[in-house]
Length: 102
Image 1 (cartoon, rainbow, N blue to C red):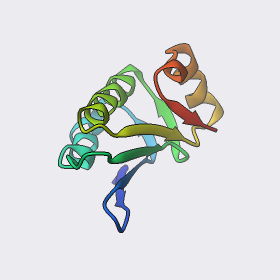
Image 2: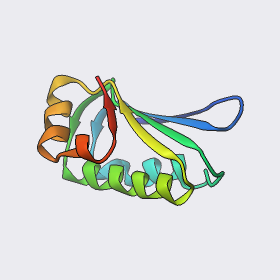
Image 3: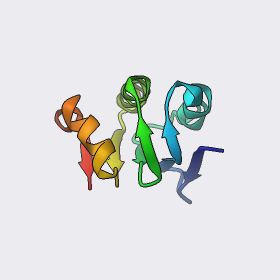
Image 4: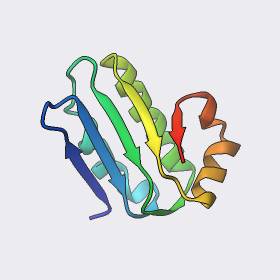
């Protein structure tokens, strides 16, 4: 499975990890990883340390996750993108929209 979800003990932080390719084929798995997290103030961490490739549909999925985080008055942070993935995020100017930690 390319999408992994971890929930903190206090249910306030959800970490979603993507291994290998992040493209439209993961749409359903990715959505299922966060859609039921509706508690106010939930923090979402998208760990891209294992992501080797990302396309434009992945950018759209990240924006949907950002919308969901805002809906529950939470926040989204992207962590550990590799150089190639971070370049895509920079070109799309995602650094202006959310926190990205290298």
